[in-house]
Amino acid sequence: MTPDSRLQTPDSSSNSQLFIVNCSQLVTLAGPPRPRVGAEMRELSVVEDGAMLVRGGRIERVGTRAEVEPFVGAGAEVLDAGGRLVLPGFVDAHAHPVFAGNRADEFERRAAGASYEEIAARGGGIRSTVRRTRAATGDELFAAARRRGEWFLRTGTTTVEAKSGYGLSVEDELKMLRVVRRLDAAGALRYVPTFLGAHEVPDEYRARRGEYIALVVEEMLPRVAAEGLAEFCDVFCEGRVFNVEESRRILSAARAHGMALRVHADQLSLSGGALLAAELHAATADHLEHTDAAGVAALKSAGVQPVLLPGSVYALGSRRYPAAREMIDAGLALVLATDFNPGSSPTPSMTMILSLASTHMRMTPAEGITAATVNAAYSLRRGGEAGTLEAGKRADFVLHDCSDYRELAYFFGVEHAHAVYTGGREVFRRGGAFAAQDVDENNR
Image 1 (tube, one colour):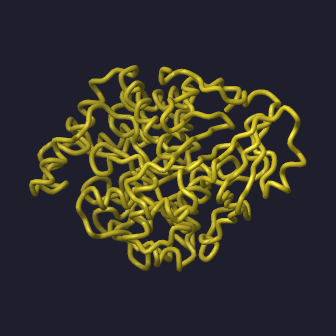
Image 2 (spheres, one colour):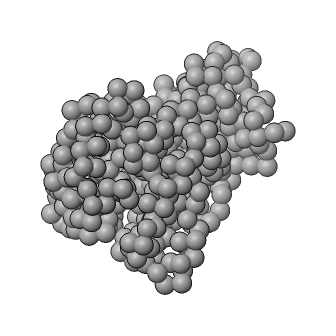
Image 3 (cartoon, helix red, strand yellow):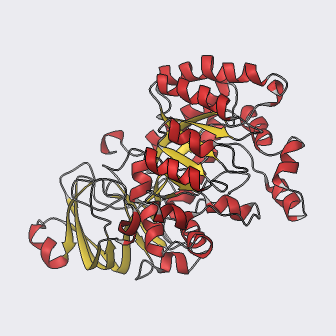
């Protein structure tokens, strides 16, 4: 069977039912229709020996087998979970999956003692990926990103945010976002597009940064908005990249074009990014390794969700993880994401992120799961569709080859996902093949 072959699964476009039984734990995360805060982040709404009924790609009923079985029709397909854990698909709310090449050479140089900043100052880092991405065609970027999409699926992720930011010219940024649109239309993995033209100042504008900012505001944003290519706009708010004033200008222009806002904030220094995200009522402030108590309080007051990315701290060999415990205790609706990218966090594995969150940020396994599912979905404006297993929502769920949700973070470095379903359709099975690579858009 080839990777593009369809497995024999119920047709999610029909009225047929899929009845999932024999779940050791059915982790539904059912609850209020909003992101979870404080003690709520530990409340996973676990159904022991649970069952779920799916019809037409949507969840019809969830509960114990005794509660659900009376509603199962005679022609229903039965999926025996085999005593496995069943969980909503992870929602990765910060990722950079579209790029050309990789930076394995820089990884080796960092292992030999060079810092990320030193490599970037010599033309490496983001700018090296920009050069490769500009040289690639849209078809080449699509093929590479589609392969990476399989990595996300096989680790249990079913929705991923996809940022541009490796083009840094009008046409190359548009090229990247058009690839994201193709990926979302063609595959089982669902993508949420974010414009990140303010990711770095490209080589040709190093001595003319003001002109580059004008290019982003006056040419890139209008073109992106005209084609409807991005739901969000993000900015790398950092002193050496885009300072607070520059970031404010770009984000304000994006809002005028109807985009919601996200901010790379306080990653390398206390740059004021968290305060800016709060001032502009951004959807999220991401990274936050250097954010102080004032920044945390501002995010809470403004209702901004923090997106923490421990994978990038780990991969860069840093020890400064964001203050997750303090943010949760302050009542913030915290999100975890991979920051998948070729330089500072080359991992698509949300379970690796869950492990880092527990071992380095003192988050409980339950808090980690909440942060990687329901809270992440709301940060992407997908809370009504994804992130929990409740009646009416899209049937995006994963059978994990373990019996207890705590094992996902405990057994780190393991691909726990046994089978992955999006819209009620099996798209990956361990030991089998990827399926539904060309999903009918009417079923999405």
